[in-house]
Length: 144
Image 1: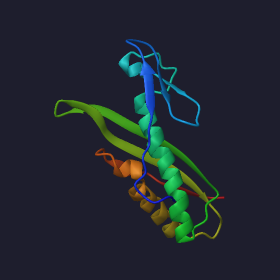
Image 2: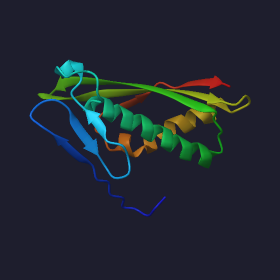
Image 3: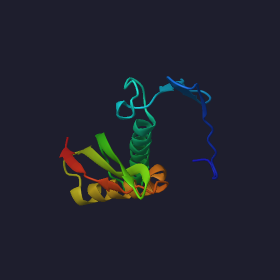
């Protein structure tokens, strides 16, 4: 890892209606629009889905580092998430994010240590740690 602090830049272009394009150097552009719940087309990544995707990808990348440091091997991670948006105190926001990691581990792996690695990964994920929304973990371990 490069020394901190790190800086990230993203650009957005869009008009009074329709899709927006999000871009940054060196990666393909991303088309975004409101989700169906906000009368969007439902065929593009929405800000709500992008937030959950950011939490999920950060979880995986953090899990890789925590598992390596903990000397816990895993075969694969399948992760689903669900975010609840509601109005609280007059503000519409995410009120909870639930992560459901399904971690495939080799036979003979200490299951308690593997669960601990999942919990540490959720706590150490910089995206989750940057949110005021509570993140709840519902892990499942499967022997490969």
